Amino acid sequence: MCDDSLTFDEEIYMPSNTQMQEDGCGGLLGAAQAETRIDDVVLSTLLDAQGAGLWSMEELIREVGERVAVEDSVARLLRAGLAHRCDGFVLASRAAFEYARIAQ
Image 1 (cartoon, one colour):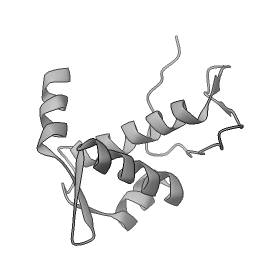
Image 2 (cartoon, helix red, strand yellow):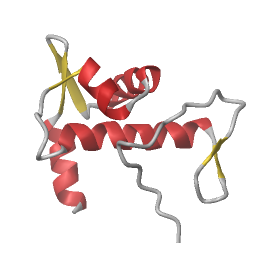
Image 3 (cartoon, one colour):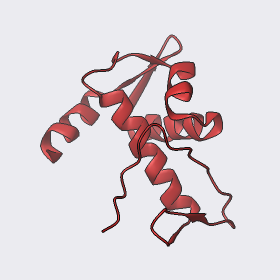
Image 4 (cartoon, helix red, strand yellow):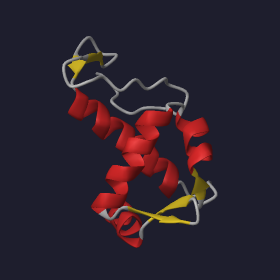
């Protein structure tokens, strides 16, 4: 069985729309699937009960490891209402916390 979860130690590569990425299970991920995976890692980082709660972009980039992927992911999470930006920091929204609670 293939584990689709990513750890923070894994290098994340965002392919262009025409490129494919190996998923580690012998399959390929398209750009949309790779974006979903990075969004999941970034949101999980923001929701982590052991974390700071308030993350600078540089901290998120260091934690996840890919500057452009993290910046794009934060932009998507902001548009979706799952994150807020305040004075250069990013934090999970109340909606994100509520969804995480319900999903457990």
